[in-house]
Length: 289
Image (tube, rainbow, N blue to C red; front, top):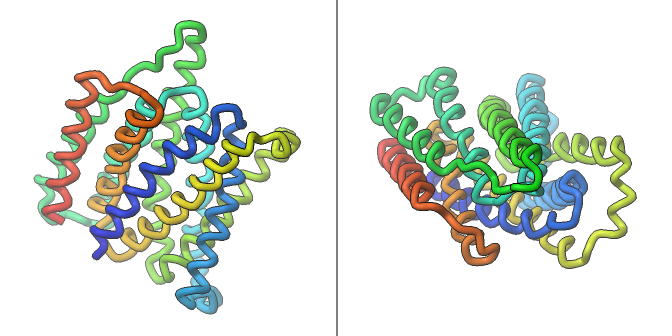
């Protein structure tokens, strides 16, 4: 069952990246992140009350709360850098770098959670995924602003590091917590970080001027993010982290397909080979979970 929820997480996450890209063409990325996080929070708590886990918040241990908060903080930082990278770069440039968090997360899971079944096969798959990621990474085309091109790569890389930490903190934090409730709690942390940044930079004044079409895409990206998170943290709680994370990162396939169709972005032959390596490594890892 957890493999199915991990797959659904990948589907929704892939759609999220394209919707978010459409929503930040003229809208500040920090403002867009804050708005979509609000949507995710509402979505998450609705699910919590539907499944009836709200009353269990009183019995959550201090240790679980701490790691849920750390997970939320790392998520917030990852998001801010990811959507900043999306704002100045192509989806097909940013997404592969962000998905490189798969490799780091899988290694952490093997070391920290002793997920050593079929260890040799997992290590080979991790190397395959890493090689595919390297093949997909390309320098953004920005002939007029080399600094922006370099910044895009740096932002995406920082996003990947914190995304990896997010998964590890979340696994520890939701060990004895209902997954939907855990998602709602950590989303609240992300929301606080996002809106504090918006007000600290004085960007809240831009909200009234957001284009209605872009606002729609931002709201939709919030809904798909919420759906992705709920599936992902359910899979993290009940499944094998070193396998769940690579499956979730298959969202890159969905992202690229949507970017090819709707954003008219192109992939090089090298990037297609890299994508094949990522998919192949992930599928084999899932088969030997």
